[in-house]
Image (cartoon, rainbow over all chains, first blue to last red; front, side, top):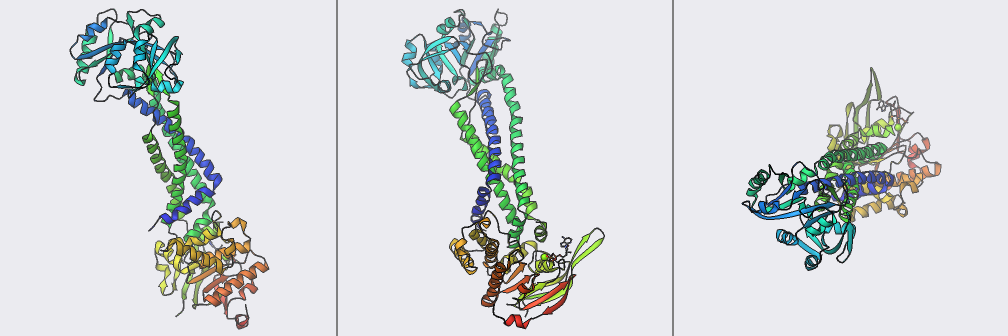
Length: 383
Length: 235
Ligand SMILES: Nc1ncnc2c1ncn2[C@@H]1O[C@H](COP(=O)(O)OP(=O)(O)OP(=O)(O)O)[C@@H](O)[C@H]1O
Ligand SMILES: [Mg+2]
């Protein structure tokens, strides 16, 4: 059977019941907007905290401390850590936040020795605007993460003021690492001075090991080395470190999963309600279709297709809006100097649409089948 | 051979302990090309009989053979397919689909047939032409008068060129001139295109268009006449 010839029928039913379709579609769009946004947050969490086989970065933090303000380590730990077997590079980092809250618009300053930084990130970052030479030359220069630059509208040559630090924007950097998105990299001493903390004190060390098999033994050795020191350390892989500091926010995001589920349930109820009301109002109509020879199965399919079409239109609008907002806004959830980006892409959109199609069918099927199986003669008596 | 042969046709409804029997063992033969009117008081079983013959209701007992096929033995799906080929139903309240134009309403039954889009559109146009409403093809039902809506409904009933046309009080909701219009149209379809028509009506003048009038009461036939005078009268 060629089903395409029935498509116009379904489209007309959806388009020409304007009020019903308008209300249903806007409800679906709102639910899908929320759902997609939550999906995007969860995707960001996965990107920021899921370890991949290629990760070779460790972060050394002050033991039992959970925020950049209180994690203070002597800078000279670097040379001792650098001597451990398997360690390729050690970079002391001073972190300063514009804002201590968990927020969508935190600026993270990282003071780093410029040469260490460039050696460490060689090949992993790309300068998309401005120049590295500028950055090297000026002591107040900063490299700005692409996401932050987009959010704050920063371009090379501008002065940028946040967290009581005024820097010159020398370049915009692009990187796959979520922790490079929301950040301004400046010279270590410059950040230390601006933050009025001592020159000998840093927040953390980022170090790279030769290959993933070194991650565990190196972390153990470092923490052993400083166990009895005045400032003991706690060493984690970068992703685990993010998970540890952002733990509360991650719990919130993972709780948001239930909100997402709630959106889907609400959406299904909305579609089912629209279809139930619509088939009740169209009893005679479906009886006419049966009379002229439409089988119950065909009628059920037509009604279900209406549900699916409304779900796809509403879902498409909502999900697209969510993806656009996430992309244009370049939001990232910042917790204690760690960034959880909100990332939505084509896959998020495609996944959302698939979900809509499935929900539309699921919500429409039962009322559709019921409507299509009513005894015809009784339908005409009922109206 | 008769086109329609009903034997011992009975329809019962069971409500609690009582049995309602709107049709009580009737026999009916209808020839091909006949124009038959069913009359009788309200509740006498006219619609019930019409629905059984049209295959949209199933009898409690008895058989209905149409063109050699006992439709009481057909499965639900085969009965639907049978209706799409053999029956055109005209309702008292037109029952057009409000969101579809006149053209789209008439086209509806043809979607089930293996026709090219072009043939389908041509046949739909012809049906609208035949009922004299081609100029209103793009109008929605709410933009048409009752008489015009009924014309569209008749176009929908004849567009598949069915074996029988059944009409349940097709003029019941219309004033005299509009009713006469519709009856002239049905008469023409019967005389010129030799279509078999079963019509239910309360109105003797409407019944006068038929070549045969059957009266029902309490689910049984009380008379079956061929009013020659009316049959010979010009439409
Ligand atoms: N589903 C049902 N359950 C119970 N009784 C029913 C049902 N359908 C019809 N009846 C009864 O069958 C009887 C005959 O109904 P039918 O509609 O055939 O009468 P009719 O001759 O067409 O009347 P009218 O001229 O008012 O249209 C009525 O008494 C009606 O109440
Ligand atoms: Mg009736």
